[in-house]
Image (cartoon, rainbow, N blue to C red):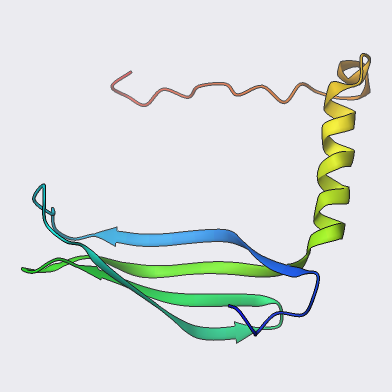
Length: 105
């Protein structure tokens, strides 16, 4: 991405969709290719293909968003400050994770 972003911009991964097609034996070399295939505004989609010496191991897409670094850090600081505020739990629901068990659990 060097040379393609404005000063103060970076990309952030927002979605990964990869199929796993074959195992790679321990000690094998895995080669991964990612090619920019679509630009839709500030969304960049890469086509991904990984292979070892014998077969394709995975393929799919990876999407990244171009973002302003300062604005991102300001939003992150605001969230961090809100979550560490002594009365943050009074402002809304808790952000804990509740496990969901499938039919085998």
